[in-house]
Image (cartoon, rainbow, N blue to C red; front, top):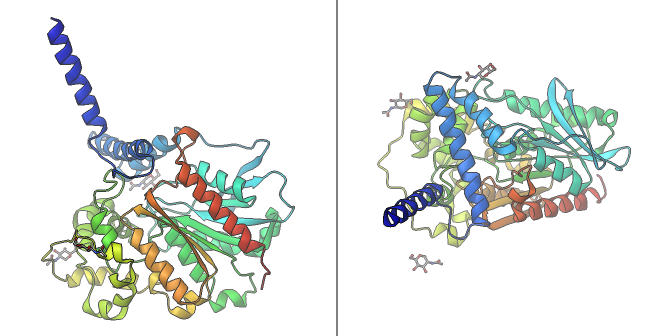
Length: 421
Ligand SMILES: *[C@@H]1O[C@H](CO)[C@@H](O)[C@H](O)[C@H]1NC(C)=O
Ligand SMILES: *[C@@H]1O[C@H](CO)[C@@H](O)[C@H](O)[C@H]1NC(C)=O
Ligand SMILES: *[C@@H]1O[C@H](CO)[C@@H](O)[C@H](O)[C@H]1NC(C)=O
């Protein structure tokens, strides 16, 4: 009997551990247990969302949104307390969540923040702990924007919401206790794309003609900036790095949804072809290829042994569906003309090693610097996507993400302390 018990107990332990570690994380990732928990949360959210859809409850995308929200926040969000005033408001027709540290000046600096989630999921509530910390550490007002999500609201809906809130704050911010000469924008992942696009939008002469103050800074945390090459070294070598969160096809999938294609079409037909770069014509390569040239990346990334072996050929139909997005700087910021990049505000760029879109950030940094824009780059050598989303529970937060926010916000304050011109 005793022998049987030992065998059963051992089998149960092995099965449990096998189950917990069936989605491994990179060996040298920062805080592997927390990375692993994060990955399980994302993976389980998607599994449960699909399962409930299969048994006839809801739809894939709304189920995934609800599950992810629950898994990340456990329904916990902050409210006003002795160090922070937190309130929900509607600005320019868009719901925002505003964090105002107690004791800041009557007219305080502000960071307008666009959350990540592939343009299709997540919300200011999921980012509550992150935006709260940014406000607390930076002593700035943070305005977290609940922009419309795709695919129900295709591009440019979400982007226009971000532009509308930014324009309102630059024009009427004093009504919200904001110093309109000290406003910047920021975002991570898809939100980093929105922030880069908004930064470009506000360089337009039409905006200057409206006499709006200039944006002072842009915070880009692992942003998506291009759709011209989905076989950059980071895509290929990190395909399985955080497999429960992001795969090689994830950016193409979300970009297709952002264009307005439904999730099933995007997943089954568009993303697989885009991952093979079948949407990129020779004309696009000739015009934009230099922007995504692998030679611009550090030697250690270029030298990756992982390569995609593919006999995929150009698909003219697919190109027809995507051409206009590939040449639109508000969709693919990397295609912005140098003159436009040059006028965009100083940037703080955060990239993480274990991320399929890591190289987007590195390429964008290169082009901004080449255009003469001041860039501060933080690279987390053992970081992973999406570690910058802070849990409401401090024991689940990544120490290095918290440290990065501190450094980021002190750089924001450094820029704000400079003369406004
Ligand atoms: C998700 O839910 C919203 C609100 O109920 C609805 O308007 C939208 O169509 C749903 N999305 C999908 C993809 O069915
Ligand atoms: C590039 O990869 C090759 C083969 O793996 C290796 O021998 C070489 O040392 C690498 N070079 C650099 C600069 O990392
Ligand atoms: C090209 O892409 C379209 C859209 O997904 C698809 O319907 C078509 O079958 C593809 N053509 C080829 C030759 O793969």
